[in-house]
Length: 89
Image 1 (tube, rainbow, N blue to C red):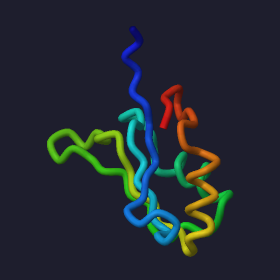
Image 2 (cartoon, helix red, strand yellow; image 1 turned 135 degrees about the vertical axis):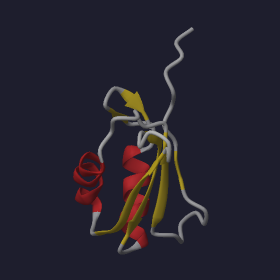
Image 3 (cartoon, rainbow, N blue to C red; image 1 turned 180 degrees about the vertical axis):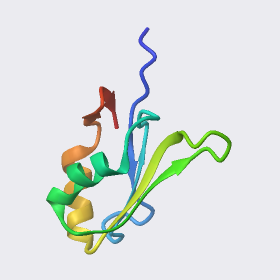
């Protein structure tokens, strides 16, 4: 069996929220990489990769908020299960 993590994209209020949660990222994924990938769908207001306080490594999930919900929905439908740095999200 392969034990690669699957990245999932979800939001709290489907079809309403301009914010997405992304999980399953490699710990070395940088916010600049995510910004580059997601900014093609619209203007990003907030982008945060959650880090382990002890070592500063990414916990493998991120929060992205777009200026409008259309951008978030587009990004979600286009990028769900897409690979970033060899890992599905």
